[in-house]
Length: 395
Image (cartoon, one colour):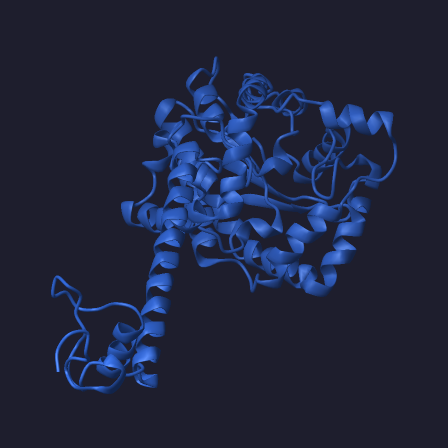
């Protein structure tokens, strides 16, 4: 029958199985029927498919995290390379956290008003050895070539520099040789960044030392130093300028700030930082390093070649520091160095004076700035005894 009746022949007007209900325009129906159709056409995802989808999301997240981390590390490296707080790259755009005393000493050598007859070598432990004091005691023109963190490689470079700049120079030497200066370490960045000194080393050794320093460029600790320099740039530049003025014509570190502070607050020095620093060195120190020995012997041979003589002084340390270092091998390392030098002093004509005990020169623990650096009066007292023991070695 027609007229308002059911069409398609299914009770309730539902479409026959297998057919879609369409609107007047012939478009597929939406709503509940479409959802029912989709449920039939697309069965639920299997566990394997779900696992693959989750895995893909994890991989994308890991890749994004990796790229973000890589970008951060590269940004840190770029920051540290430009600011160069440890003086590794040698950009020279900003002041470094470390003392740039090697370049200062090179500049002083170039401007020496007289030919040096004695050269002082060593680390910052020898900074306070006044060349004018040695000159007053011996009558010999003296230059202090000691540098922060100085090692035998530094002595080799400065001995060559002085002789090349002043061919008439045939100096003797006083070497304040701390036991730890013969431990294993690569060439200092501050040494390699000074072209006048770098040229005295083989290019392969320079490259290897440079590569070992690269890792610190990607350190967040180094980045903290870089940011600190940028935040306090004016003050740090002013401090660097003052430091350059703290060196006398003859290479003596004239700054007495820490001496004055100790005069105002008398008592034993604070040695905790030195205990921590030196303990780390002696724990890993099995004996004199071959490279350190190589440059020490090359330097001694160079002086001997022009008839130079010398005194090697093993300096004192604050008694509390020595006590703290004994369990990590300080006594054994000292004996190794003494024994090693005993095999050399006849061939190279130098004297060894062991001043490690304060009683050897009537010293006092209050004569230290910290665990290893002597105040000027204490240094003079020690050196007066050294010259007395060495006799005419600086002839």
